[in-house]
Each structure stands twice: as structure tokens, then as C-alpha cells.
Image 1: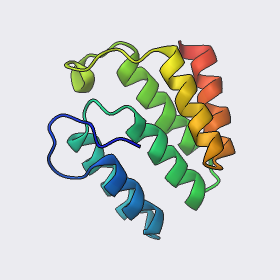
Image 2 (image 1 turned 90 degrees about the vertical axis):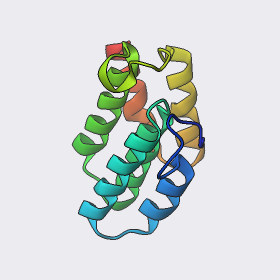
Image 3 (image 1 turned 180 degrees about the horizontal axis):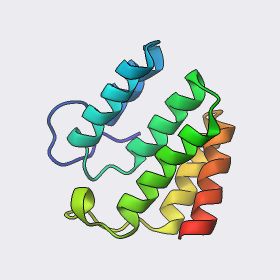
Image 4 (image 1 turned 60 degrees about the horizontal axis):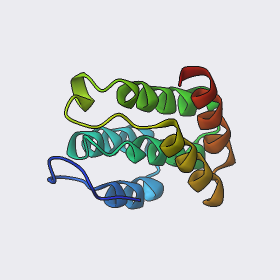
Length: 120
């Protein structure tokens, strides 16, 4: 997990993950994700972490897939939110899928691999 992001204010990726895994209220978890995205504009890993949190609290694969798909889309051709960020390679996304699997989030890993295969 990375705390790299621009600008470095607000919620880091590590803080987001720590707080969100403990939060039982889904709307508060989603607010934490929104805050973390704004604080870590160039940290594509935040989307994978959010999917892992969603997997922990909810087995709705459609929601997990939507989070991951949005992340891949934002960083596939950076514009808008990711305009000042470098494009994220397919290899980097595959590494995130492997990391998610190592952390025990098999649904997140499988869905990210599926998205990578179809969208990149």
C-alpha cells in the first residue's frame, strides 16, 4: 500500500484502508473512499484497496467490479481526475491483482484480472 499521492493532504491510502476495514456503515466506507481518492489523485492502488474493503463487507461482485473498472478507466488514459498522473501499465495492474490475491481477496483479484483482459 502506498501513501504516495498528490496533493498529500487528507487521507492516505493506508489510513483509508485501516479505517474502512473497521467501518461497519457502508455509506461511511464510501465517504472514506471518496476522501481517499481526492487525497491520493495519482494513487491508482486506492481503487484496489476500496474493492478489497468492499469484498470484506459485501459479496456483491458487481459493486467490486464497478470500483475496479472505474480505477482502470481513470488511469488507462489519464484525463480529468488523473490528468497529471502517468498512465498505469497493464503489468502494474496485474501486480495489484497478485497483491490482492496474496492478501486473501480472491474476488478482487479475479475481477481485476478480468477487467485487465477486457479493457487494457
